[in-house]
Image (tube, one colour):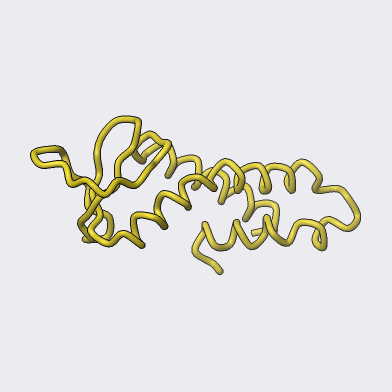
Length: 111
């Protein structure tokens, strides 16, 4: 697989993951919601909510903050990777787009 194909695969995967997850934006709350629906993330329980289609819960505040922070970076990651693909024929492409390559490999599980 070429580097551009790696990046394109990562774009597709990230979009699919975002669309399959609860709609954002995500925020963390210190309140526990009794009787509400729960979504466990990797078996961890505790306070995470979204403005979209539900309430999730994660018990570890650091885990909750990480999920909130990472969710906020999805559009930025997609922009970096899309820009890299759009500029592929540029002569210094591999040097100028290392961030996109690193994002792609991490998203694809190859980092």
